[in-house]
Length: 291
Length: 349
Image 1 (tube, rainbow over the protein chains, first blue to last red):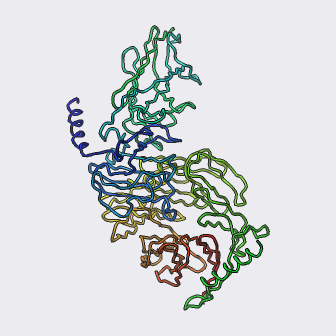
Image 2: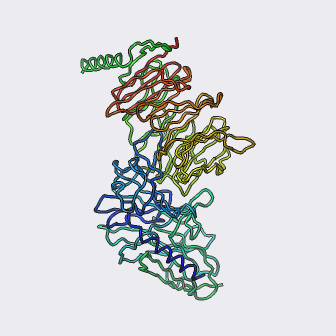
Image 3: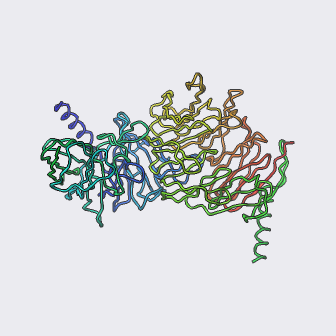
């Protein structure tokens, strides 16, 4: 099993050598898996000092839509956008482009070829590129960080607050050290976000993974690698939760960590959040469960 | 002020007579009916109102008199049917449904872009991956989310269909059950560029694929849709395409850049006509059994053409406007330019 993983990893690394970021010196404005209105952000939002948007790999334009086309096109929040099909069943989407994007002018594009400029078309809240990776073979939307060269990042995620509630209870309470609870099943949630170090102002982003350890054993792993379709909704592949099931409460970054069993005695809860550069933060709580 | 208005009305009238002179051809006599200077009138027949949309304004107009009952500025976009409208901003999480007189009906707290298809109201989410249906009181009837971008959709009173950028098609029946349509995958790359459903749900038509690109009609038999007709395009256009059923499902009309196509179900014949520039609007005039089509010309000009279902050009005129609105009532065609609406009567000889 481990060997298969290693082979896949090396094959992937080999293929990805040709991929590049769609903008120069990208700054992440919104991350994969974040809540964006009533849905998951299934791509990333990027800003750059250079407005040129390039194809991340060679490919073929399979769909484009102009924001001004109100005759045959559905209204789209992506504004002006292009979908490019690459080898290995991968598709990339570039949204909110400026009006002068490539459109019908060209069908085949080379890796690094300029296909448009960063714009503010559609429902963008500023000038940025919306960029998305889809794997047509697996039917999943892939976190672009898995596909593109790693970016420098020295900042660590923040675990601001952790909450607990008895599974049948209506509301959460803040989890503190030395809390005494009755033994049983409990839901945990937490306010967790990553920080972007190269943004001018303090900016919150989704982390890459969240692990929950109960008494030293990994009890839950939520990883923002892919989003897939399940029934009528999109869910985070790692926990099968839709955006409204995962992001809870009024706080934008409060996420549901799962349901955990606490046996009588001392229980140690450790929550670890990490970003793509493996910068980690953790918080640990010691609670006492009584019969 | 009054003098200036009179002059502008006179100029409008001259322009109107110039654009639509009383003209006879072998098929029709064309008579100017009225021109509207876009003023709201209080004393009008409200039973005949139809929606209009110009470049910056929308509202409701009487095709009989040309009087306007309601008009407002478009924020970012507007969706209308005969009774209701939603005028919305590009970034909003609050969509307001209004009656055609402007009065408030309901508020829907969701982000996305609304779309009236007949009497049904749909909202496409900002990321174009979720479609939901709502009643006009703001109640959610169904929601469907996909991992692919929705490229096109259509609905009749019972059934909703949507096509996606990954080539899939879903059908949502009147019980709001979503089902994937099993369609032939005949092309190297699968994308749905346009989709339509007939009023009786017997047919679903779509423009799909690259290498080759097809227009496929699927017919329902024993609750399953099977291929009924396929037309292969000579080239691959990679942008959304117009496709729609007309005249009680007798005609299926679609476009491919400059080409207008009409499939006649009674003769099973596909008729087409090449126009001089890309098609920007298509409207069927049932009383006269022909199509009014506009095409985009060079800067500031639109060509207005009447085409019969056999693909024959009946009338053509160039208008000095870069925007077009077409509507009809009986044998009267309403044509909107950037800031004015004209009406002409077509009388069959």
